[in-house]
Image (cartoon, rainbow, N blue to C red; front, side):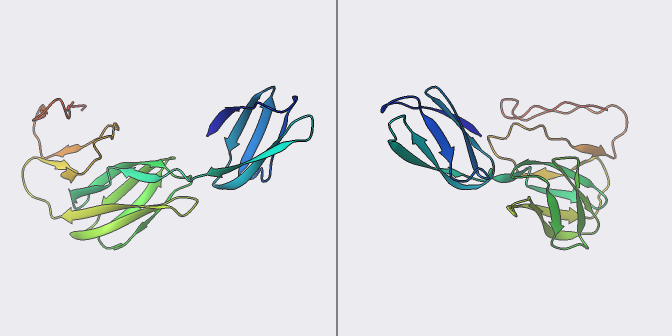
Length: 191
């Protein structure tokens, strides 16, 4: 992230330096100082005026939290569950707790694909370049006859604005989808 600050007092012109440019860089234009976070860590920015007076300001660059949306699902054997990875630091990788129940892969920059292999439960853990982790809880059930959705159940945050895609299996003819509360969730059919 980039933050801009005003510099005042003392005697201009001013200079600014970072104690560790691997974490924080600084640029000064007149009385406007721009500080950029490069990667997680800390650095001090020292501002000096023309008379030699100085002030040191400590900056901490935090990690962007890693999340998965949705972060849990229930499906049927052979289903492929898809989630979006948000935050953290790419590249991402996935680890499956029980490889007999599911396999997982990262597609593109931020898509987690989980293929269900046999009945059971497991946790898929997504890790980023800084080893932050986010869990995804998976339940795999045996197939049942009739119309079904994949995934059959998910949990999402109330602040999540990502679209959620379901696959419909076992239907004949045109499909119509309805929501029990359109103020919370709207459903559309594509294909």
